[in-house]
Image (cartoon, rainbow, N blue to C red):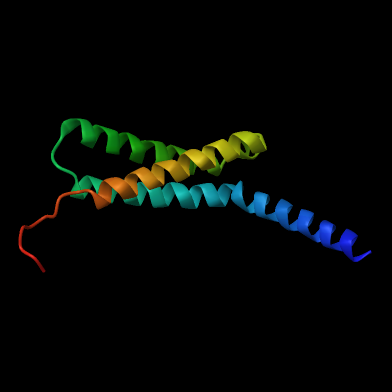
Length: 111
């Protein structure tokens, strides 16, 4: 009896966790965070034209994703597609964090 209840609770918890991960509000929050990181990377990056264009593209795409997350069509996307999108956003976030960490220091003076 207790094993059955434990399995049911674990299944319910897993279902709730998945629902939280693919919630449109979560995507909107992640898009805003990535957009902010891209703006920070633009301030810290060297003046390379290619890098600036990539950062502008990221900012534009995150704005579009925020708008799309508000629309009912987003809720109609399959769970698999939303999970793939989430994975892509997490990877983009990690790449932006790495680029920010590897940016050259703005001054040569130790602080």
